[in-house]
Structure formats: C-alpha cells, structure tokens
Amino acid sequence: MNKLVKRQKIRYRIRKKVAGTGQKPRLAVFRSNTEIYVQLIDDVTGTTLAAASSKDKEIAAQKVTKVEKSKLVGAAIARKATELGLTTVVFDRGGNLYHGRVKSVADGAREGGLQF
Image 1 (cartoon, rainbow, N blue to C red):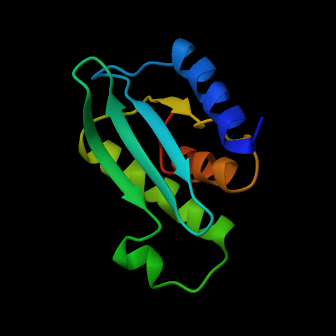
Image 2: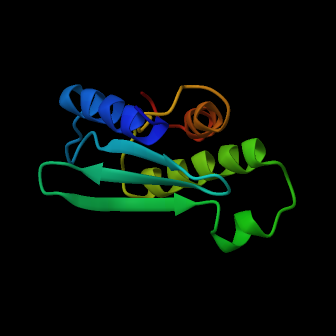
Image 3: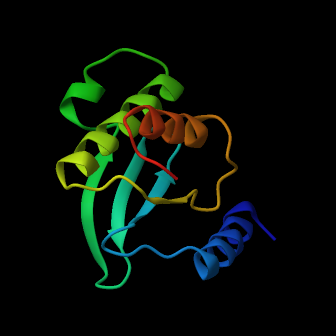
C-alpha cells in the first residue's frame, strides 16, 4: 500500500469523527511539499467560510522556513475567523501527523485566539 492510499484511509477515519458547523467550523489543513493551505469549513451547508495559505501575498513575501510560514498561516486564519465572530473550531489534520508544519499551523491559530 503506497503512502497516499494510507493517508487517504487515515483522512476518512478522521472525517468520520470530525465535522464542523456554522458556530464551530472545521479547520482543515492541506500540506503539499512546498505550500500549506487551511480552510474553515461548515460541513452542514458544505461551504468554506474562510481560507488562508502560504501563497497569500504578505506571507509569501517573507523569506522564512516552511514551519515558520505555517505559523503565519495559522495566525492569518485566526484573524479571519475572529473577523467572522468565530472563536472555537474543530481541528482536522487531514491525515498528516500532528508534527512539524501541521503543528505550527495549530500553534499559530491558538496564539491568534482560536480555541480547539
């Protein structure tokens, strides 16, 4: 079984337990080799409430490591969430280990004021 198939099975297992609502959306993390993307998702209506990524102009302009960029992405999504009046979210690591860039997104979001 290759790595992608294994990760997909883990994602499905996580998604059985984790679901977001309008009041408490799901903070979904997608990590590629070079970039990291996060979304606040309301699974009841199936809509994305807010999104941030390492490709955003103010984040991409900074010459820092990928882990530090991930922390900036977490802070950016926390800012957007508080603008929408959201304080609590459900964290969805997307089948990745809670380590490195995924962990730094969570840390940045917590420092930005999100609770999960």
